[in-house]
Length: 232
Image 1 (tube, rainbow, N blue to C red):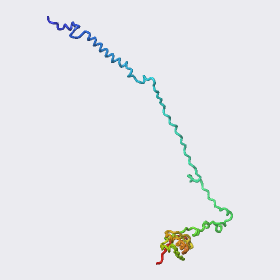
Image 2: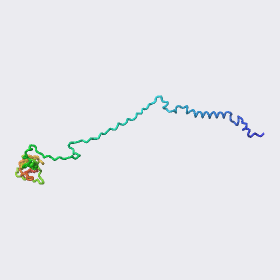
Image 3: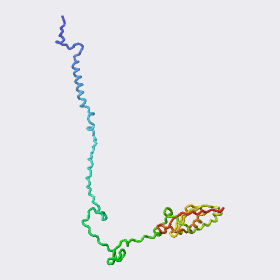
Image 4: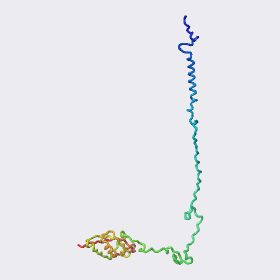
């Protein structure tokens, strides 16, 4: 008898092929369990919750607002300093005529200094120039100041020690000559040791012609040379 081609479909058997009867229910249960675990596991895991919620000793953070800036200082306008000797910035309203100046002690007498025949003369109050000797310091010879001429010459005395030692040399001396032509000061510029004292003593006895400046005798400073030489 030919086999019914559609019999297995219309009348299925529990033992179709090699499958067991519990395969389908077991598969459905396994898939349901896996889906349930995927949903329940995230809900049952407390470790993924934020740590701040599980902290028993929370730390409180205090936020202090910044200090407001001080109020702006009011700047007072600087007042100008008034000085009694300062130049006025505004012109005076009027200028009064200057009163004639009366010298003290001559209110009723116009015969004092500065008055010539009762008329004031400013040229009469000009003091005369000071004397040249008191106003002029010693002037160094040179330029328009001519060297004075020697009118008295004193030869130096050769020191005995220099003669024994056969010492020769030249002593240069700076001499200050007064207005009368006499030597008032002398100092050594170039020394010759054993010969200095003898040269100074001789120069202090020299005399010169007065030196004139604008027709007035004045003191001058000049350099003189004293030579010491032994006879051959």
